[in-house]
Image (tube, rainbow, N blue to C red; front, side):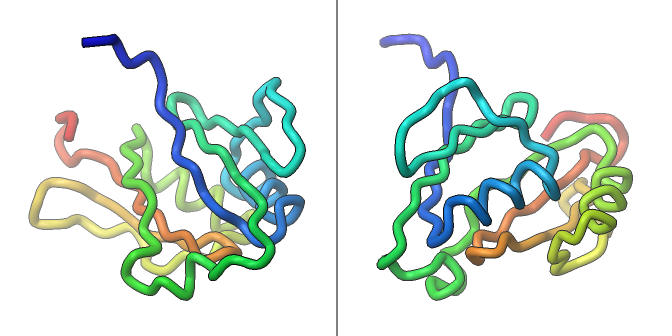
Length: 126
């Protein structure tokens, strides 16, 4: 079996410039040095995404419960929540402790992709 070196979530967006600005300016991603028309390649530490402009496709929001794209574990969920909220993120739920050992909050991108940002309670690694 080959070794996996990196993964990228591929997200369809209706307005590439708007989505790229949101991921960079609000969520704190950086642009990778990869250039291809109609695409943005972005990273936040070990999380890598490819945003592909699909103007005529259904928005992620229209898929309802199928618009979840990632569950991200960070080292300080409350600090990240404060930072992205201050920069204008649409936060769907405030950080809260869950019975399954994570403290997490949820947010939604302008295209309707939803993600969960969490921290393991008690210092473990989920």
